[in-house]
Amino acid sequence: MTRVRWIAGVVSVGGGLALAVASGSAGEDALVNDVLLAAMALIAGLTLLAPVVFPPLVRGFSWPISRPAVGMLAGRSAMTAVRRTAATAAPVLLTVGFTVLVTGMVRTTAAAYTAERAASTSAAAVLVPDGAPGLSDAALAAASAPGAITAPLPTTVYGDRPLSALGDGGLAGDEAAVSEWVARDHGWRTGDVVPLTFEDGSTVRLRIAAVPSGAPAEVLVSRDTVRAHDPSALTPEAYVSRPAGMVFPGARTVSVAARAAGDQAEEDRLVWLFTLLLVGVSAGYSGLAIVNTQVMAASARAREFAVLRLSGATRRQVTAAAAVEAALVTGIGAVLGLAVAVPALLGMRAGLAQKSGAAVPLVVPWPTVAAVVAACLVLAAGASTVISGKTSFTLKSAHSKPPTSANA
Image (cartoon, rainbow, N blue to C red; front, side):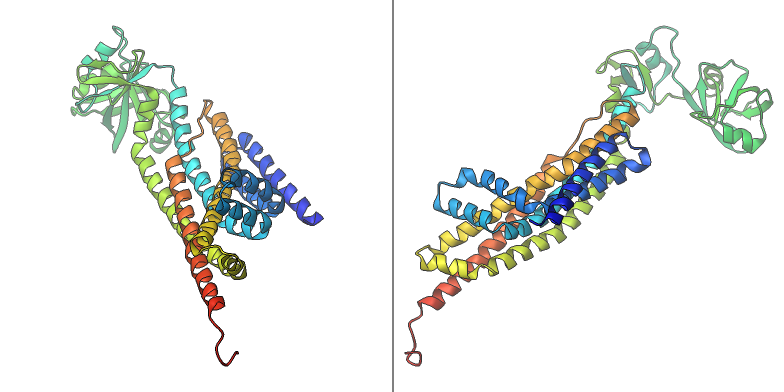
C-alpha cells in the first residue's frame, strides 16, 4: 500500500472511533449525526486498509476448512487475490453494516425510552385496568394504603371551550391551577377567580392558585371536586408500591418498564415496519451489487478455471471451490459490517444512557441481521456457482475439441 493510503485509512478509522466515543456525550441533536458519521468513517477506513485487514481475516476464516482440497483452494485463492476479495466483500460489508446500524438504532432508542420511563419514578409497579375502562376508587383503595388515593382523576371542564382537567390531591376544594398557555389565552393570572363548568352542568368559581409551566393538563383542580361533579370519572393508571403481578377487583399491577413498553407498542410496531421496509429496499439494491460483483469476478477468472479443469479438477470441484470462496468472502464482509456498526451503536447507547439517566441496553435484532447475512450468502454463493460452472464447462469443452481438418 502507498503511504497516502496508509495515512488516509488510519485517519478514517481513528476518526470513526473518536466520533463513536464523542457520541457518548453528544447532545440530543448531534447524537444521530455523530453515530452515522462514525459508521461512515469506519467503512471508509476499513476499505482503504483492505490489503492489510483482509489477509489475516482470510487466514482465520479459511483455517477450519483448509483440510479438504476445495477449502484449501478457496482460502488460497481469496488470500492471493486481495483486491478481488475486498471488492466482493464490500457490498456485503455495506449491507450488513447498514442493517445492524439502522435496526440497532431503532431498537436501542425504544429501549432507552422504556428505561427512562422506569427510572423516572420510584414506584414498584403500575396499577392498570383489567377488564374495565379505568380504575375505580375501590381498585385504587385496594392497591394503596388507606387514605393514599392520590392518582390524578381525568375529566373535562368548560369555559369558553372544553378544557382537559385532572383532579389533583395537592389542591384545596376552591383552588385551581392552569397551564401557562391557557392562562395566556384567557388573560388569567394567579389569584384570579374564574368560573368553570363541570360535567354535571354545575358552574363553580375557583381561585387560580398557580400557573405551572409543565402542567400535565390544561386545568388542575382538587380530586374531591372532580369526584363530586363527575362520579363516572375513572383513573387510567396509578403508580403503587405493590409488586408487579398482583390482581385486584378490575385491576392488576405490572412493572413500570412493561407499562412503558406497552404505551409505545403501537408506535414501535409502525416504526419497526418502516425500518424493515427500509432495510429490505437497501438490501435489494445491495443484492444486485453482490450478484454483479460475483459475476464479474467469476468471469475474470475464466483462465484460472480452465487451468483447474485441465489439471484434472472436475466441474463440481471447480464450482464448489468458487462457492466456498464466495461464502468465505461473505463471512468476512459480515464480520467487518459488525465491526463498523457496533462501535457506533455503543456510542449511541452511552449517549442515550447519559440523556435518560438510566442504564440503556444495546439491543440488536439478531434474527433480522441473520436473515440479511443469509440472503447475502445465498446470492453470492449462487451467482458464483452458476457463473463458474458455466465458464469452466465452456472452456473445458473448447479445449477438449479435436482439431478440425482445416486446422490440421
